[in-house]
Structure formats: structure tokens, C-alpha cells
Length: 613
Image (tube, rainbow, N blue to C red):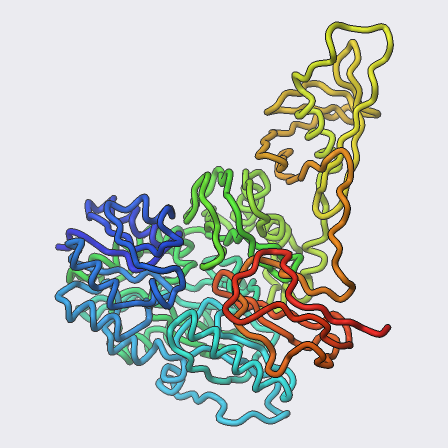
């Protein structure tokens, strides 16, 4: 029996594994980088071991340090979670070689399937050795990882070499392996996968299908089980192929076989030899705990001959600290409040935690289960809409609109969903009465210079920034209380404002954190009474859209270089993703302040491109 598990990961998956271990009576050990010293996963575990440094390559990708931490802490097993070293056969061997139990598949199975190139060959498929114009578009993928990192779509042969270089650099930083490969890119398809679970006694379960079609940057955003709208024959064939893949490598533990489905045909993508981010939807549909089953399999227990029966429908949305309207730019800062009532919330952050620049920007996964798909979609959209998510900008509004989009509700989505619909899904639509509610909440209890006066009080003016736009509101103190044109103020204090508009009462739960104000789900920034002078930046200035690290500058770029509009000039890395900074216009580089390895803050001046036009 396993008594103590070291979780070789961070964030929400580490917290989720700790939760199951605690329910099973198993002691837990966390590992953390210096950047994660106060992280939630390090707090909820029974013990925690420091991995000196902050970059993944120095911490969570150092298998030797993690094995040493397990031995020092008295753990007798290691659970890798997902990402980082979870599909690293060398790490699995090091864990087993140290006399520890490995809660995962055998190293040989990882070796056979964790490399996408070897997995394809095992399934009778071959990556593209050369690429011609007739092969376009193609997809460049990291051989050793997932999660959208090290992945690029190439539609122009001229850009292939640059994308290969970028993918290799990103893959090396995320997985410690820079091997990439090229395959045809199938457009207009759906991303469907099958959960497998196998024991050491020859039993292999398939636990239905999942649909993970809604993706940004090839990273999943909304997932559900079962995959809607699949013909029964196609679903059966996917499950049969998944069993074939698992048996081909004598698989043990939890794994996922992924496919792209287009025109009624399934194209094998890969087998992930680990737990997936979206595993909760399968748990909800089958009424199981996959982490608990992983542990029992590692202890030698046998699965039942048949898996439990599926029931109902489950759907999951990933909450990211990012701004979809600004190229999915990751956000940093303090999470003041994170509460999504009425759902299963697998979170990696709690109120008061800080989001840094070093790791993935996922805050939590919100999961619901219902008898039907339509009910599950409605429940999740409603819960997210009412959620209190206070702090950095998130993708919450995008998730709500995506769940309610007609293509999604009718299950007609494909992997190009966000390419087509992102502008409409990110169009600002704040509550028009939120600025007034914020002003009235701030006005509650303020002195009016003594008692009532016969003369009318002076009109008060407040300014707020909402979704990038400035809003000005006016209100007045009277004998009857606070008043505003066309709106009856039913109640106003620091925590609650109730307005009556055209006979309908509108309630706003209020919260304030310095200059940041929340009126219900609407975030506002209080502006000073008098406008501050604008920052003086020369035309063509390239400012850092987020805090991060300058990882590369275009080869040969220097002051005096001629550049074309849209040409990549430099790359920032933030939260495990690379972000390309391009020339705003055709012209000449007149200033270049960015250097590789430099840490920059949001708004930092990186370069200036002067255009003669």
C-alpha cells in the first residue's frame, strides 16, 4: 500500500491529486520553485520541498531534484500529474530506480507513445519528411509534449524555417526536448479523444469519448463528455483504436488517445501517456475518481472486468488569466476573489494568491454534470456569468459567450471556431449601469459638510475605465437621498447597490480593491478627477503587451534595419507561451531596447519603428 505520494507538478493538478490522496488517507508532498513558494499546491500538501530557481528547466523539469525530494521527504510514490515530466520515460525510470512506486504507465510505454513521431509509426503512420507547396497547410508539433506548446500552423513555405525554430525553442523550454515533426493540418475537423484505463492484469477500459474542439493556440478551452453528435459506429471505432493503441504497448494506468474527426473519418493524432487536463468530465459522467484508480492500479489492484455505465453529460471550461481580445495575452496580478458557485471547481489559486509570469495562466477548471447536454451547457454558462472572479483580466466572458453561441449549442463547432468568431465573442458589452453603481457605492456614507441646506447640492462627477473605454457618471445628494437622471436609487452602500430602471430593479454586488471596482461581474477602474498627461511615446513604439522575458530578437535586427509591416522583430515568453512582436508598419528601426534574457514589465518600450508615411 502507498503511504505517501510526492506530486511532481504544480497548480490545479497538484491540488487535485492532493485532494484525492487526502480522501484515501495518503500523506502528500509538494515540490515548488522559488516563484511558487507561497502557491496553493505548496500550502495544501502535508509537506513541501523547495526546488531552487524559477524557470521550469531549473525546477519542475529537474527529475534528479524531484527524486531527491521524494527520498528526503519519506514519500514512497511519485505522481507526475500532466505536463512537465509526466511523459518522460527517463524520469519514470529514475523514480523506479530509486525504489519508489511510479503512478503512471511503464517507461517502455511512455517511450513508445510519448514521442508523437514514434506513436504515429506504431499506428502505421509517418510524419512528413519534406514539405512542398502541395502539402500546405502543415502543422509543426513538439514530439515530447502537448498543451499547444511547440505547435505552429504553417501556410506559407517561406515561413516554415522560422516556425520550426520557434517550435523547437518553445518545446525545449516546456518539455526539455526540442524534437519537432511536421504533419498535414486537417482543417474544419473536431478534436475527439478516448479515455483509457488499464491495469497490470490485462484489463483495458475505454471510458467513452470527449470533445475538445474549442481551442485557442491549439490548447483546449472547453471540453465535454460524451462527444456530441458522433455516429455510434464512429464512436465504437474510436474506442477500438484506443484499445489497440493501449495493448500495442502493454499500457498500464490512465491515458488518452486523441483523434481529429473530419467528414466522418477519424485521423489518429497521438496517445498521451498521462492524465489529461479534461479528465474531470469523464469522472463526472462515469462516477469515478481517475486519480484514485491510478493509485490503486499502481498498488497492483485489478479493475472490474467492465467499466461503470455512463450517465448524463458533463462539460468543463478552463478559466485563464488572459485577455482574448489582445491576442490571448496572459495577465498577472493578485486574485482577489475566485468563486464559481454551483460547479465543481478544480483550482490552482485561492483568494489573495498572485499570478506570476513563469507558468501556465490557467486559474481553474469549472465542471458541471447534468442529465442532458443542453442542461449542462446552460448550467455552466449561468454559473460562470454569476461567478465572482476579481483580479486580472480573464477569459470568463469569452467562455460564457462561447457556451451560448449557436454553433456550440447545436454541436456544429470545429477547430476553427475562434478563428471565425473571436472578434464578435470579445466585443465589449459591459452593463451600462455598472459605472453608476460604482459611483453610488463609493458615495455611500460620505460627509456632505454638515446638515441639510436649502440650496441644491452640487452635482458629483465620477469617471471609470470599463473594457478600455472611459465612462463618466453624474449623481446628486438630495433630501430623498442619492439621485441620478432616469434612475431611482433604491439602496446604496459599499457592498450593495440596487437601482430601479424603467420599473425593473437591478442589483449590483459591490467589491473594491484600491482603484479596481466590481459592480456584479463588471470590472471598472476608478480614474482620477483630473486627467494625467499621456505617456510620451514616439509613433511606431513597440511596448511590451505583458510582463515576460525577451527570448529572441530577429536575426540581424539592429538600429537602422529596414523592416516590413507585420514582420516578426522579437519574441516574449510569458506563462510558458511565446508571443511574437511584429513591426507596426514598414520603415526603419530607430531604437532597440530589448535584449535576449531581459525581464520586462507590461508597457516597457522594446523598440521603435519609424515609418516615412
